[in-house]
Length: 77
Image (tube, helix red, strand yellow):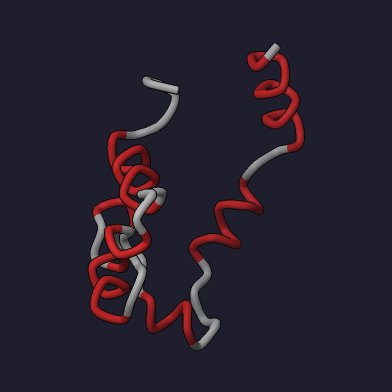
């Protein structure tokens, strides 16, 4: 997995899959604030996400062409 995703993504995943739930990022309201501030989510306005006016993800999804998925499948083989 190393090298396949950003350092921010790896850090986020590692902090969310801790065995002890109390050590997981996002396990309670205070930690949820830390989760939202994680560098992986830089540029995300969670107020827009909450009121469903966030267009960043939709724009990203719309920009991906089906051929890109085929390219990823081929690389995985």
